[in-house]
Length: 404
Ligand code: NDP
Ligand code: HSE
Image 1 (cartoon, rainbow, N blue to C red):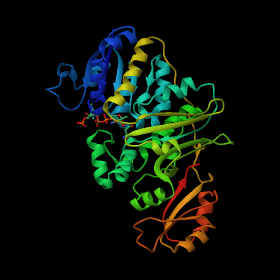
Image 2: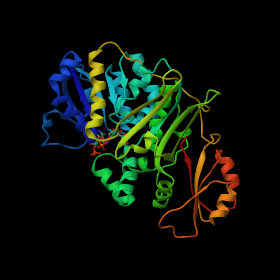
Image 3: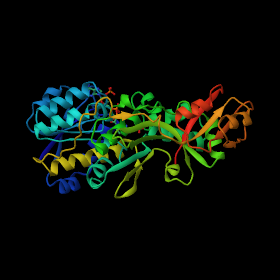
Image 4: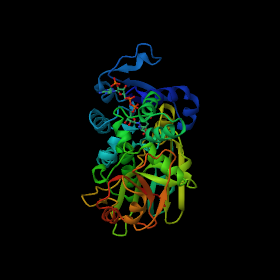
């Protein structure tokens, strides 16, 4: 029998308890033995929970119990979660987590510590919610040199953009819905400012390119600057606005990584990814393009990925599964300044003036244009610097890359 302790009985932690106990017999068959939920640690009391008899408040109880084999960390953040994770690994227990902030910032040292202790540190749920991506990237695509990874990595922002377009509700209303559904981070600015997607693209880049990419090295822009005017102009050009994380292998060995809203053509599979769904595209030198799609957030989809890791550890008890990467250093990642793309520009300027500043392009129209502004898609692929040079003296409201 394998004993599990869950740290943090919130959206994900409660889902893990529900899936572990609800699917007990099929999980036992797949894991090759019973997996027992022995403890749940939370700061709050849950007297009405069916698991009420398993709650503890002192992590020391879990740390010092030799029967606990696997600790599931679903508290979140890089504070107490880091302390408990280190202590669990030091005590010879495997740790499974959905905490992307911790993996993105401290994953290199925690996977190393797990290796030293002969246990596992697994985090399938940290990227893409229920979508299998960490294991496919590290195992199924291991034969490839990964050239590029990009995709929709945040369920909350994709939900907000979809609801604003489909239901015509405001940004604030759509965010409140995402929070009610348990998609958003405790501090939702991590979602809407792009930091959550940044952490996820860093984790994917760590695994794909084998070196630690720090979130601090990755220029990040969220969706708070995207207006309904931008959405309308994009639609008039047959495009959707999507928040993308991208990591591209450069010829000099460094990684170009960034997070920003993009215009995506309606014919691109990413344009059809709506609601809380995420999609991640990976380009390998042997396989070409492969895409992973599914629910990117929420209680049970995320619990599905966490429990899969628990089963993996239980099935391979005593055999650590090494998932690790090297420290990266200051130069591991460069931003996207040198990356050329076509651009969408909205500016407080006369239409022909904007087009001529851009050196040509396609002017866009929308139904409720208030006048005094114009929007244009550039013909040419430009770096950000080249774009800024052309737009010197123009009052730019929005400048977004066009994917492809
Ligand atoms: P929640 O805030 O819902 O759950 C966290 C739980 O941990 C809360 O019950 C909280 O209690 C408890 N907690 C806080 N501090 C402590 C402590 N010191 N000791 C014990 N328990 C504590 O978060 P989520 O479940 O949404 O997210 C958990 C992690 O999973 C995060 O890293 C998140 O980014 C990640 N994640 C979330 C997904 C989602 O869809 N929600 C999807 C994928 C990953 P209290 O509320 O009283 O503070
Ligand atoms: N807040 C995150 C999201 C949770 O919306 O994608 C899943 O990681």
